[in-house]
Image (tube, helix red, strand yellow):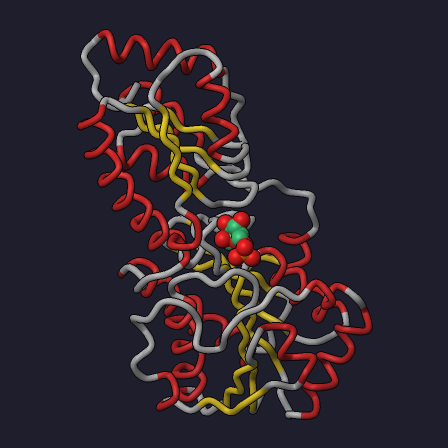
Length: 321
Ligand code: F6P
């Protein structure tokens, strides 16, 4: 293999730049050229492609966002879009592709694989919702960003004896809420994977107040409902002085943590090795401390569910209620 491509697609995640850098540098180490594709699959179809040298990726390991830009491009689910993409790859002599992103990105890579084109997917999303990997690039940075915000909210919640509902991202997954709920000592964690009982939550807030608790933090995953809707449900029961904070896209930015940078570097280098060794149709993951190669068709088939670590949910019930 003489030339490979790399793209980032879907919602950006801190650490994507570190992964791009690793792809370019490892390829150069192994004597292979890299072409960067701007704006994910949209740029692929449009032929927005440029050569990347080792120098082009200097000074990006620490930067949030993605130097290759990103886009959501549902048109890539059509065969027409996929064939156009392959045409562009062939035009540039690109023999294999590294795709960095979440579920939609992996589905695109799976489609290319089905057309016989070798792809390796690197899990990059703050949601941590990809099957076959314990962690995705960006998750660690996002939860640290959320944690910082929660610590600040706790200060003001205590001063005013208020209840805060903090809505966090995660799409249909509860991992961000789960980890930041435990990490901040939040009284309640509400995630799509576990049913909640609003009356029990109200009673628990009242009991906390009677014990002298000055604040209540409720970390709510966006996949359950919006923060305001949840607050209305609580208000309908009693006046808990509820305030709502929707953290929004601040969760997607910022300099990646050490963990995300290292993980991204491992994934990027491993993806290059796979392609050079003639392996395609792979979704990389980390299980324990080991980088694993999953079958991308298997990961995107919809047959498996991504399960959060529910032991953390139980732990929080026991130590933070
Ligand atoms: O997948 C990452 C994510 O940030 C989700 O947590 C969120 O639901 C979604 O993307 C928001 O997408 P957009 O930036 O397109 O509004």
